[in-house]
Length: 270
Image (cartoon, rainbow, N blue to C red; front, side, top):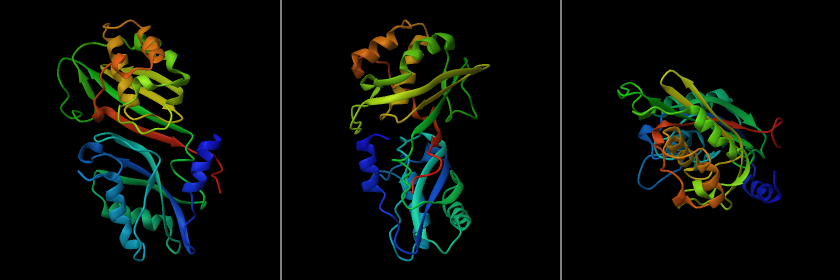
């Protein structure tokens, strides 16, 4: 972990009060009905749903839940991670069962475990993985309509794979960054970008140390233009080097994106 990030982690990981325990959550949610992970003034978020469910168990204290990162409105998760502090007298399973009983059916706690007092779900994460789901066929899907990006034109996944190979490694991803992104640096390290086809379904798996706002969706929107044959394979390298968002493709829809995994050191930081 870089020095700047380590200092931020140290400032943010003030331990729980005496007699309390820090707990790590693994969360799954259907993002359709949520305005995103983070609390918002204009909608109901995943964070707000969890904090409301948690607060009655906190002996009159305000609930504060930290997440590994934000997901946009409509984005789903099968492996989001968060942490909270709560009285140590209850087992982790008690908190998990209570949260599952008190939150909407579109949100599930998959795991809850005690962690060291210095653990932080955002600052100690070293790898995050997403999947993006596309279906290419003339007829729109009925069951997965809010789960995939439906395209009526075929895509060449081999061309998209070759075009995306230049993204592996450490780069300035300004070309794929939302204008409102608040990240201090556009430089991120990409570990994996892989397309897999199953019939008319295409799944992108993409992993990095961290992502900029809309970065995955802007990458997908650009790669799809290559897959359609509207842009050459070398175009992705060109816009990466140009570092200008206006040169890249459109932002792909949020409802086909899934946060699937967040990785932490083993053992966890004390």
